[in-house]
Image (cartoon, rainbow, N blue to C red; front, side, top):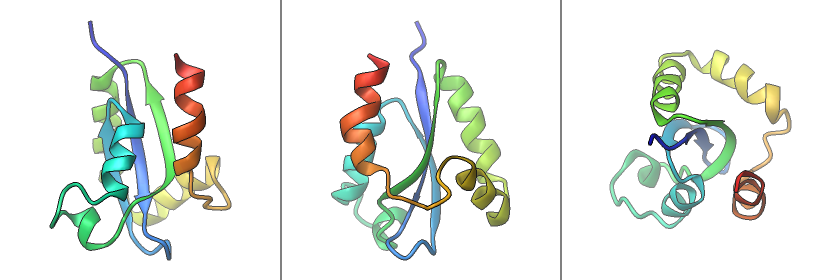
Length: 105
């Protein structure tokens, strides 16, 4: 059985850096970014730990394909995608901790 997954876009406090990733457990992954669990990684070096966009997929393979697609986009296209769901660029970390898993399961 294939489990679902998320693609997500993180930024730093000043919204100057974008990072796109994929995970089966968004809550855990955001926690890892916030607590710098991967010392020396891109997200650690640039303090990228603020969630500004995510999508859920029933299939992790589909999520991985979407992540690759978004990673190949120019910044302008990523910004437009983010604007469709989060025009104010609110940090969604607390939403992930409090809401999405309650709604999914």
